[in-house]
Image 1: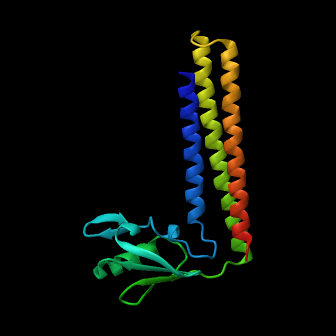
Image 2: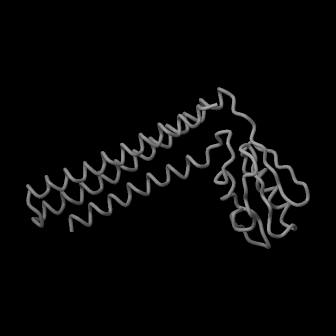
Image 3: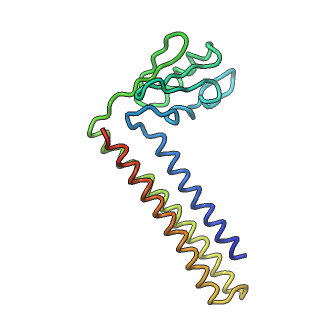
Length: 185
């Protein structure tokens, strides 16, 4: 039972870490990245779908994203969705595909992006702490109901803290790497 609690907590911590990575991928760092646009929702034949579901997304140059809908009739819808996504990018429609040119980042914009990196890292750490708190509460309830001994509770709490430390270290390393990525001109 207590091993299951630890595994559940570890799963929640992994989800928090993965979510942070997804958010990092969406940050516009001056280099083209398909993750910047692939989940934009586009109106398509009466339903909304993510852009990656109706078009191919490629990176022809380091500062350019090319989006080619599989059906050319979707070009206006794709263009509208990109504009409405408030990415700060102006889509250029040539009748076959849409091109997005990423402007070089200013120093101020880089600093703002670093603040966002720190915000996402902190949110991830908060989720990790919440998972630890939830697991610790469940373990204490097991000890209170005499399903595990006080010594076993101490062992499980130590294992739980080791997992928390491991994920916090991973978050710190990822945010440090992303910060360097953002600040590199």
